Image (cartoon, rainbow, N blue to C red; front, side, top):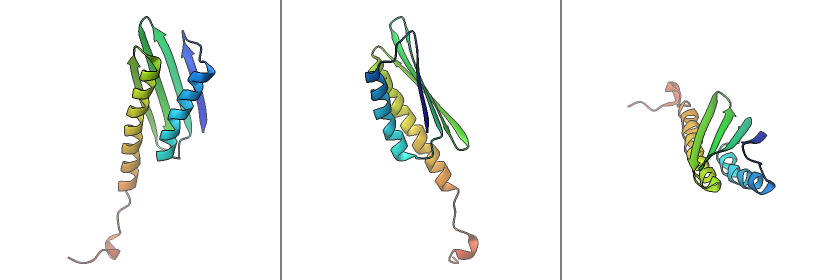
Length: 106
């Protein structure tokens, strides 16, 4: 898994990098087939914005959140991303149906 954290009008401190990495463990716990993660943090006047792109086999997942506090924006971002990853995982799991030959007759 490749992790890239970048900032626009913002220096990404080691504490901020550790916080994002710690929160992303929640995503990798649910879905371990993540290929690439790109996190983009930015500051625009009074709005702190966090965006993330995750590349998983067969899909790109994007989420963004903004708040007045960057840590709160990251928390909201991870919550949104967690819901999207679980939904993607459920969709992948639903495609495996039992073959007709093995089903019991009605």
